Length: 55
Image 1 (tube, rainbow, N blue to C red):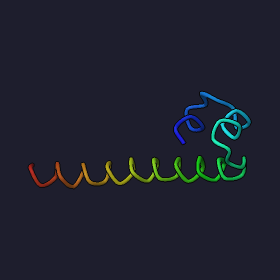
Image 2: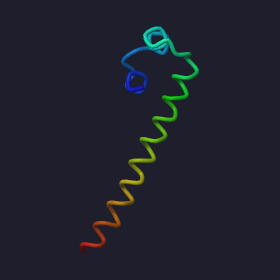
Image 3: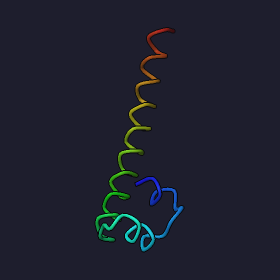
């Protein structure tokens, strides 16, 4: 949920808007942030190895 990650709405507002339990939103937000961090870390490692190939 982008709204939860960005903080555009409170958890209570999101639960009301989508009819999803607050715990589920919290879990999605946590997992989404973990995946974003992992994606950037993987990208950084991939970029280093790619630049090493061209040098």
